[in-house]
Image (cartoon, rainbow, N blue to C red; front, side, top):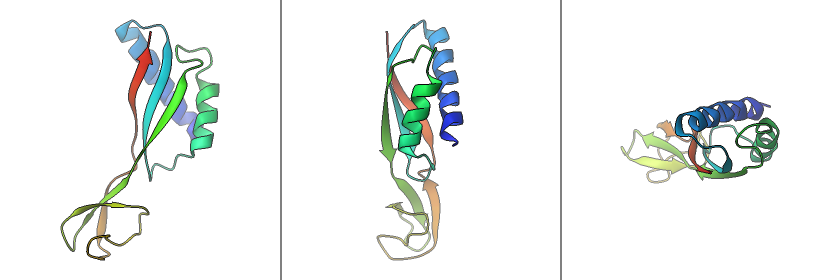
Length: 113
């Protein structure tokens, strides 16, 4: 379950931000997660609760925001949203797509006190 290691990385970022910005508690964490990031939301929610114990984010609410998959179509030269990595272009039907996004995960923001 790689969600545990992802949450450990999130915890490190939050703790560094707490030291740098002088906050002592986090009540909400909003993560942006791309469609192709390979993150299972139930596993992420479970891992988040476990990993945040004893940190400034213990008990914080986790909000996961879905980001679409994006690709550049070489046939029509448009950037398009796709559901699956192997989809054809939804505009022209072409099959020559280069993924441009959707595999990212980042902290969008924190609610702190």
